[in-house]
Picture 1 (cartoon, rainbow, N blue to C red):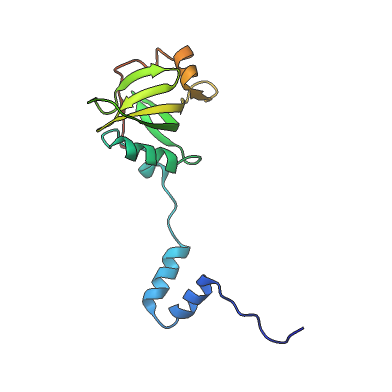
Picture 2: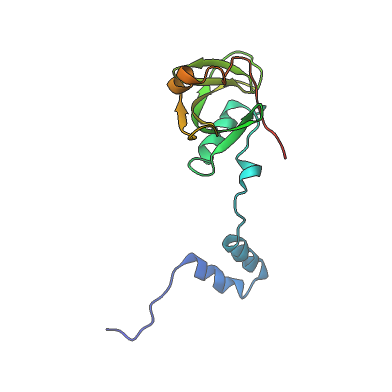
Length: 151
């Protein structure tokens, strides 16, 4: 066995060593360690006025937790998955179509097909397109509008 101390090449320790010499590096270390928590209310709610690609990014970014959400009338619904769909001009947030594939909703430039959605009703199960079509047609009416409510 050797009496030598092991060398540490951890980037945080290297930054800490530089922080003693430069206050600006210390600020970076503190910001890195004490970064703020993601606040669900401010970030995982999205605006249907955005383009479909941005909506898709928000949905993917906040899955599995916290799930992206929006409002249908006064009901807060969680969007678990979906994808962009090319369509003509449509009203942002409006339900365009309900099929076994999912719920097509208008965005600013294209549409977004919600493949899995969760309602705060009953057991709160995640619904697929077929589930929405089979049991929830009264809730997801063509022309109804999703909105972003600010509190």
